[in-house]
Image (cartoon, rainbow, N blue to C red; front, side):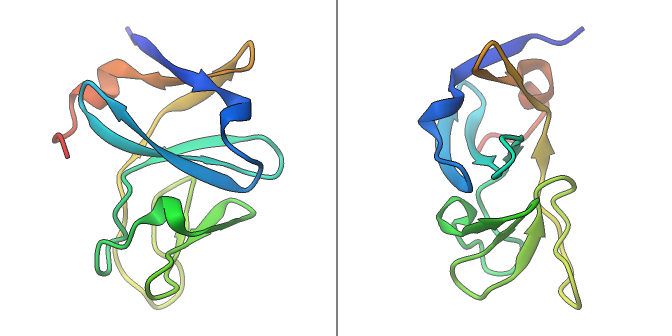
Length: 111
């Protein structure tokens, strides 16, 4: 059974934007698409640990600000010839609030 953690209002993140939040289990990057979908990933690019929350969100991907690696917000997988992936976490929107799956976060290694 999941324990969902309320991490704030959807409008706290601009469309096609991101922010890093602190949870009891470490920091997580939240991304909002232009269609108001929300995704949660670790904030470090698999290439050189670039801060993904500072990247450009386009469609359901984010481009790392350091070396332009493109990461899927759905799977965390780097696209193209690049190899590597970023951990993803279940997120949802309920009544205009962003919720993260706390039981899933608890299993991760704290940042």
